Image (cartoon, rainbow, N blue to C red; front, side, top):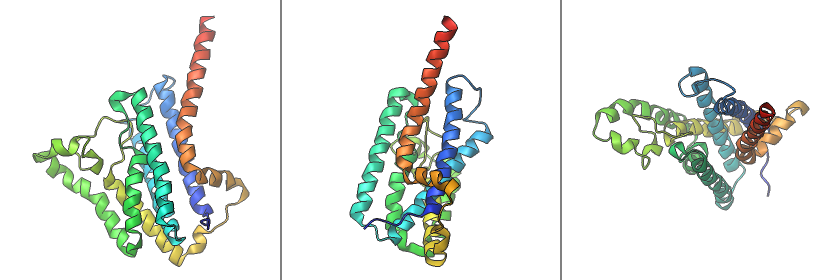
Length: 250
């Protein structure tokens, strides 16, 4: 039995994907030398990156709430999870081929894959997800000073454990979405989705008007869109650079 699609969730996910695309296109323009921006220290860009990741994880929590509400079987869950995990491995392999010194070993797809298992197992916690989410967000900030001053900093900062998020120094990687604090954001999405489906189902079952249907379509194919958008944009910019160089040389 096919699961019921929620236009509100698909549109929200589509907005997150478009926002991400604009951010990544600006990042790619910067990498190709067409812009001169600081994506690593300028608050305008660092906060955008955090907001985009947070919106993705919140949508993932909403989606998992909808899946559980619709009676998604564990078999179907694991089939979808395997697709996500394989895409995460492709991201790692592709980023290693391009930038081995800063390749992505625990980025947004890796984080979502791990967090979805936790979310699925805690989907029936109900209102308890709100304080649990707050705790997950607070823990790494509360523990940061203790970790930095303890003898365990090197252990938690190493790649083998920095996926937990209990770090005192940010690792050198092009995308880093650790379990903490981001699990808390997904937990809030799961809690919000569970509450809405119980108390305000019409808010999520809203039908997207015609102008927003393209966003809903993008949102339905979010993983495919995510995997294709950067190769296509980088490919287009590479071709543009080649033609521009050829024109200037002729």
